[in-house]
Image (cartoon, rainbow, N blue to C red; front, side, top):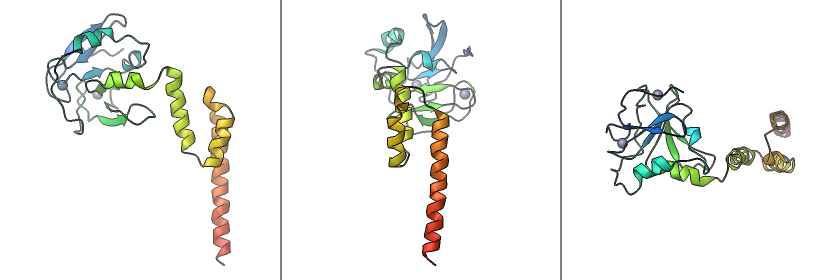
Length: 186
Ligand SMILES: [Zn+2]
Ligand SMILES: [Zn+2]
């Protein structure tokens, strides 16, 4: 785990962030306790906190009832660990919560309360990954979407071979339609 040792500057409000040792994981996370309440997670740290069953008691104890300053969420932010530009991404297939991610070092920054919102979205890790599959299925044409649903894919791991076959069939049928349109105009 690439735990940052340096004191970090909050990418949202510019305050100095505080390192908090999370006892049950053994690593530090950086929280903007004297500014906006945002949290920075180093590469791979976030996955220990994003599910409902995981322990965030220490974080909640430090932030509960505190008045944090409001930070604009629309500005492009700079990664506090490696100074690269961060990218705004939805945290899940629900597309409701946008977080800032650094593609260079893998860091993630969450505004105040975003962690709690992300945790409230799904009951389990399985529900979360099923939502990703469902979002993919929804992007398919209706006829294939139904077929994928009936195949039971949503209950377990996605079968990429099956999906690739569907995509190939789809590509072939699109070509046939193109040809038919072309010939019907003659
Ligand atoms: Zn801040
Ligand atoms: Zn970075």
